[in-house]
Amino acid sequence: MRDHRATGLFAPCIVERRPTADGMVLTSGLEPGQPADTVIDLLEAAATAAPDRAFLAERDGHGWRRVAYGDAARTVGDIARNLVARGLTAERPLAILSDNAINHALLALGAMAAGVPVAQVSPAYSRFADQAKLEHIFAALTPGLVYAADGTAYGAALTLAVRLGIATATDADFAALAAPAPGPLPTIGPDTVAKVLFTSGSTNLPKGVITTHRMMCSNQEALARIWPFLAEEPPIMVDWLPWNHVFGGSFVTNLVLRHQGTLHIDAGRPVAALIDKTLDNLREIAPTIYCNVPRGFDLLVRALDHDDELARRFFSHLRLIFSAGAALPENLWQRLTALAERHAGKPVPIISGWGATETAPCVTAIHFDGAGPGNIGVPLPGAELKFRPSGDRWEMRVRGPMVSPGYWRRPDLTAAAFDEDGFYRIGDAGKLADPQDPARGILFDGRVVEDFKLSSGTWVNVGKLRLAAIAAASPAIEDAVVTGHDRDEIGLLLFPSLAGCRRLCDAPAAELAELAGHPALRDHLRTALARLGRDGGSSTRVARALILTEPPSVERGEITDKGYLNQRIILTGRAEAVERLYAGQDIIEIKQ
Image (cartoon, rainbow, N blue to C red; front, side, top):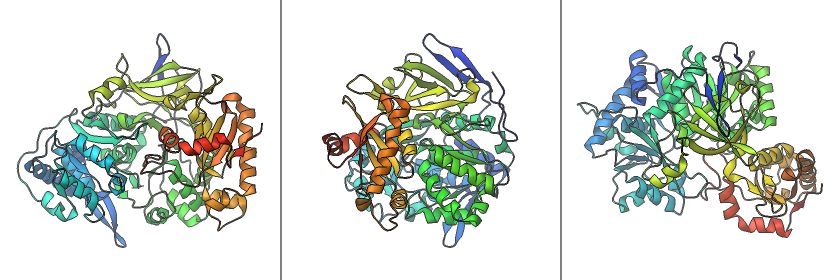
């Protein structure tokens, strides 16, 4: 066990390995520390220590609306009492349909303070023409109140709630919800349910993940132990990540709250039409910690490459870059590293972690030097990470205070989610970066549940092959879906990058429908993908590929809020494209 220390930022990285009958269990050599009992205790501590410091900020015209910790704590208490007065309970939760906003945050914290679970539901569900998912969530949750900031934008969703007999509220009602309300607050504790986060997982039907105060507070205390630099200055963050997802709603918001920092709510998104909002915010606010997903970093890096002033501002106070949601491609990691070296004047670690909605969210994180892309770090203090054989790989399972007790009103799903020793079956595979030294971190090795066998019996590691294909075909494709279950050959459904394809084809104004047939693009893909089989053997030998000109759909569940493709849903929903791929219709044949 070696002590891997990063100068000035991280705690020593010591990992203990315990052999089991069929694998091993890894734990941190650091003590987990004593977390707060509840998220509301974190808010109260911040309100006492720094009552005038801005907790939340959002754009208000050309300036910012800010809410200080002291004001936030008072408002949250009033909201809690008013929600109880309206009849909300642990069995009649609060559902919030809106995008990130100050009122949204205060309402969510108010519900938690009242012992009322809050379900921050993906805004996309409210905007679908088919409201089956939203109706399913309402039926499963039985909310006592549905809140949406904008009554017009969310009109159809609110109408659905009324039809189902559920009370509703909008921003027009916020003043009443936050009106002064004297009296004691309900008693809550570590095992009180704070949130119910609905996630589709590998199916198309949302299931509610129970999130307790213990899960979130223990997670943040563990991060404080491995990243002691967080105690040196309150973090400043500019963040768009949606609160209906665990990365934005539990990791980012609780990180700011635990360390009494300021969260600037970014109305931008990592899409061409909205990225300028993010860039404008970053021109004004220099973050100390910046979090994003690979799609977001891709657009950010393009902007930083062409705007030295923005790059200097972005890196001026930055101490840590954190990527999650999906693996950061190596070429993107290298470009981001080069920008940091050029503009920061000091090393800025680019690190990652790993977990799930069911782990609130982190199980592992990096706190050592020298970790490259694909490394997800080591177990957090308090986490037990079991490795057990699954085919030719190691499946990872987790136990600890950050793990959910189960699924909202679904004992069947809960029972299936845990093994005989109480470890949560997260469904991912991993391997040690250095088999002799687990303190060098774990390499993510794909989703066990996504892997399949060819008709020859050869196992195909979907996650590994997907990343290899994206890297090999750079900059032509943004993502790929791997096909070939029970077939003779591996195929790929390719989601192209418009900007990358335009550069390759020297066609700056062409659209995807035109670019898909361009000889330069098809030759590039044919050559790039042919290398995969030569480098990795039959399990990586791609025989055919099909370019898809219709992007992945959030409405159909093909892509999550964090930008990660759901392979199973795409394969099911685009079965016709899969058949075209193997029928040889307009495909790119890859010759080895």
